Length: 85
Image (cartoon, rainbow, N blue to C red; front, side, top):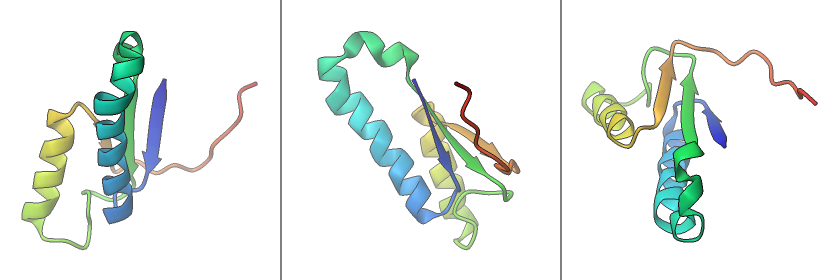
């Protein structure tokens, strides 16, 4: 089960962090056997998360995501989303 958050701005970063907390703290109690299959990805077209903010905050957010095993793709633009049914 993969979750992809497109964009690395403040709202996207907060959503990805809250999603991680929800999965690890709440969902894990009911479906602990599924945790190993869950991945969270943040995709940002720019060179850093939280682009308009200070670099120290950008690095802090990136470090937290790395610690929580949230995959962050920088310099990667989403150009389309397709249904593969």
